[in-house]
Length: 63
Picture 1 (cartoon, helix red, strand yellow):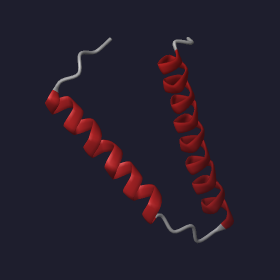
Picture 2 (cartoon, one colour; picture 1 turned 45 degrees about the vertical axis):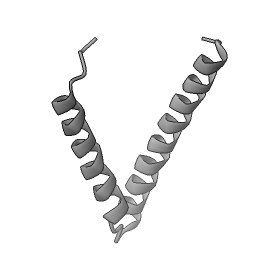
Picture 3 (cartoon, rainbow, N blue to C red; picture 1 turned 180 degrees about the vertical axis):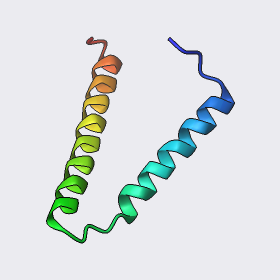
């Protein structure tokens, strides 16, 4: 496991913010681009939901 430092955390935050802006500002001007955008946003939502479930289970002591 990589040790997290303040500079590396700031870089990760910057990288994630860049990704969020890219996805949110993306204009799908074709069906293919719209599908790609939909898949990207859906996968991100599923990952966030899975992380939230894991955190919730850990708080309850369930692993």
